[in-house]
Image 1: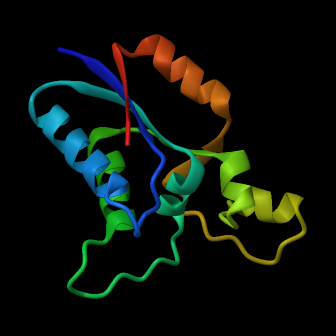
Image 2: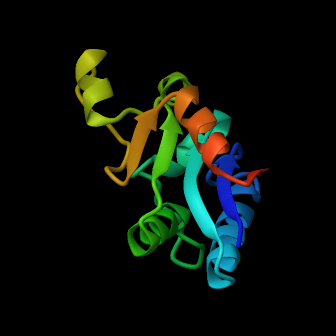
Length: 129
């Protein structure tokens, strides 16, 4: 079986990248493969925004990513630079930057491209969406 690292570059809504990445992860896991981590980069960091409120007839991608992570112990890593530029802040980032609020869910951790590189070294394949 293969070990994958998944890179999500598309926004939580506005592109199908996040949905396709999640579906790939679910299928890979169901077939016995391993997901080392999911790295959110560029507009993909918007997936961690805990303030997204999809309509009741839409898929809640934020909650689905959290569920996948919890169920399969898969780290969800945001590129901190991309997140800060897009107004997605963890509690620590908000404090360090003098902001009164944060909006990144605790299920997502902030990291750098180093985490992506380490994941690539451990994985058999990098799949980007």
